[in-house]
Amino acid sequence: MLKEDYTTVILDLEGIEVKKAEQDGEELQIYIEMERKSQICPCCGEETQRIHDYRTQRVKDIPLGKKTVLYLRKRRYHCRNCRKHFYEANPFLGRYSSMTKRLIAYILTQFKDLKPASEIAKECNISSSTAFRCFDCISYRCRSLPHVLSIDEFKGNAGGEKYQSILTDPKNRKVLDILPNRYENDLIQYFRSFSTRDNVHYFVTDMNFHFRNVANICFPKAKIVVDKYHVTRQAMWAMENVRKAEQKKLPEPLRKYFKRSKSLLSKSIERLTPDEMNKLSLMFEYSPRLARAYHLKNVFLSVMRSSSSSEGRKKLSGWLFLAEFENLPEFSPCITAYRNWFQEILNSFDVPYANGYTEGCNNKTKVLKRVCFGVRYFDRFRNRILPCST
Image (tube, rainbow, N blue to C red):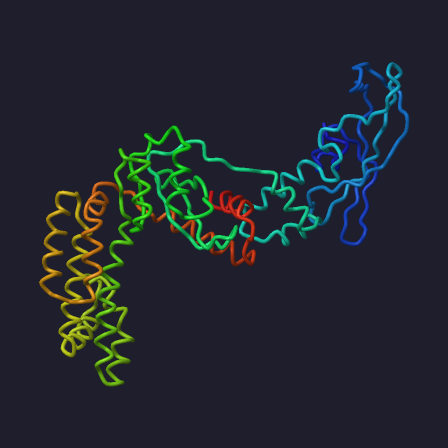
């Protein structure tokens, strides 16, 4: 049997009767009433059917192709027992609210996308401040810590701090929390509030000694794992500094040649074409120091391909001896960093965990900041990042 009232089905609102629908410019106006039923008095609990009067309320609803407004003709009932007046029960509209519950839910859902509040407000026929009032009502809380915990910093410029910290679960690809700063004492105080700290077996971080100190204090049983990308780029930067120093000694045509060929130095040696290898050979003829730096970089890449910490220990120790023997000043900071993070680098060979997912979340945050032209308040900034990163 065919349904008679398709408008009611499209609106998907429980217990309503559509009286009329019309368009006024870019606005769709729908006039509705609730089905008449006996009501229970909220004051004394008596049942009544006596209507005192009617009032029409303008209610904003989710857009149905254009701005949608419901004109609800509400009944006000009279209780003969306590002589109070009250409005009929309404399942889709909150008390003192001019928006349907599903419009509020729709607004909160839209905040998961990387778009500004002004765009959401325009689509939903509300102001930006109203959209933020709905959004500020929600809150997120990290209740437990995972088996693998990753931490990183990013430039947020929110809440009066330049940098914020992000906590993620790289194993399950989930953002856990956003912290207002990166200060060591504040991080320790935050982690000590958890009773599940023993659940963390691996603590993944970049080469930030503040984060390592936090891990040693709060997670003494966890293994600290350094992200391989941050380890590898130390050697890449050292080689790049050698190239910059060498090209300054050359005449202008060769300087330009060295600068335009710098991508070849970063490219894996297995992927070089014969023509590219010839270009590198020409560069090495002009600069033997660059050839030595290039060799150190390639040897270190083979170190990072170690399948276990025992294999990596031998290779990394051999590389440190070779780097000291080459005596390139640009590699001194790199050697010092690898010695300071020796065990943490070895731990990265035994597990598949890294900061790749965390860095991807940071890239999303950058997009969010650019789209929203920055977010001043930290709590609002945190609440925007968490749903956008899921």
